[in-house]
Image (cartoon, rainbow over all chains, first blue to last red; front, side, top):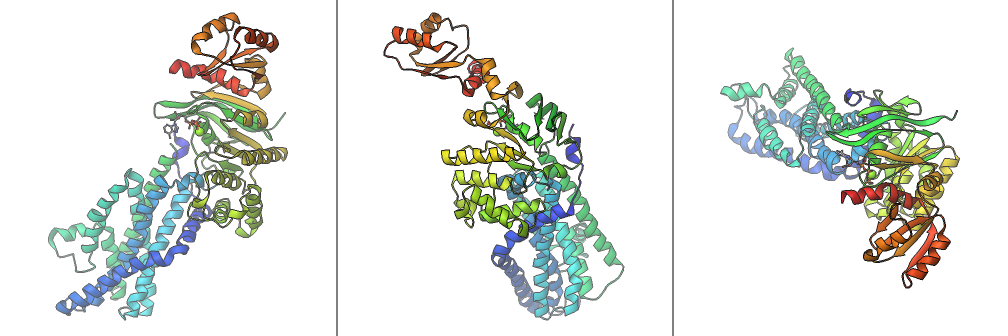
Length: 261
Length: 310
Ligand SMILES: Nc1ncnc2c1ncn2[C@@H]1O[C@H](COP(=O)(O)OP(=O)(O)OP(=O)(O)O)[C@@H](O)[C@H]1O
Ligand SMILES: [Mg+2]
């Protein structure tokens, strides 16, 4: 009965038109949007890196603490950037502003619109992560080429977290539920993903951490910055990419079902 | 044979157990204006949304421009449609110009190509002075006009207008009517829902009355009036206690008459005789005589339903 509604058929040009809309809106307020999210990691970097770092010295895997936490903060920043777009922002656009109700009357189908938003979330994550990578370069914590090594990781991290936010948004009816998403998912992950201390050796936390997405992103960022590139990189990259693809596929399907009732 | 813009067979829309559109069939020839009328909740918007390819059918078949809407993506159909939704789905924090530009892009139009078109459309709906005003600062009627301009951005072959003139002042409404006639003359197909019978009478070649998800009557406005009622309507402002006697006198108690609170409307072929007698029997009561119109047909077709349910 609902056969025609469910199969997904994407058009990249149509998705890009929706992506463009978000870029267009964002351009008008980019500085106001970017600054708070830029200060936050800088405060962590300085507060923990220099403040806490003074006590820790060189004990963290033989390097000073500022160096140790910098790469992980880059991907965490990417995570925050894209998460916001496919959580609160997307929910408001779907349920309050009814943005897509008029968009889907045009050749842009709902799956195109969602793909566009996912690409935009990825773009925003890239901006946040990219800018922060540049900041730690200015702090002298990474080299100029390492900025570019970090970018593909920032890209995949942004994509994956955009997809996780999207599927969560697809399944909730109540905007208040995002507080659980942030306090029970993002915040613990932020602390136990290896940004601030190695988690592998902590009893069960280490086991759990392996399954969390940010862990792999942080791992990758440290591998490229501390120059330990090996075959594991491919595994972590695949995790981010496949996770993003699978979750976005099911998330978009769910949202399509919501529209094509 | 005339080419059909729409062919609907057994069109049905269910929301869970609720049947919003119940097995309706109709055809709409190209270049004509078709109107859906009916009380709130009749299923007009649900039907329009299926035609607009934003709501899948629960049952039946629907062809738009001879293409089935059951295909996987409806982009090629939607590329040729213009939609004025019942609700205001504009981007409130950007200007009128930007709204049209972004919407035009969804059709794959380039801003350089549509710049002149945007100006022309804003002129047309008399919003040129608001070109660079954010939509949230527009009045309700201005937003409706902007929605109409927006629906025309892709020069659509068919335009779906769900209550396009609700909330418009008379000047704006006549403006929109003129434009709709112009579009029809240029061989665009128009599908319209409205609660203004005058609008339906003036613009529509064919009308379908909907009630409870069913089409209860369909035809040309003039024919519908002729089929369903006598040619003259007499409105009598009379106390309800006196009504049974009056209806008895004129032998209309068995026929259709509209009972609208203060007003009683009876329909007759020969209004002259009836008026003379009314003035004689009921002097001092306000009586008006006029031609029967579509509103009367609406009352007949859907009005008693309301009373029964009440
Ligand atoms: N998404 C939905 N879910 C459940 N029921 C719905 C939905 N959309 C419409 N309905 C129901 O379907 C019926 C028809 O609604 P529709 O919007 O088509 O009426 P309408 O003729 O356009 O009325 P109006 O003149 O008030 O605009 C109503 O009873 C409405 O409550
Ligand atoms: Mg409606």
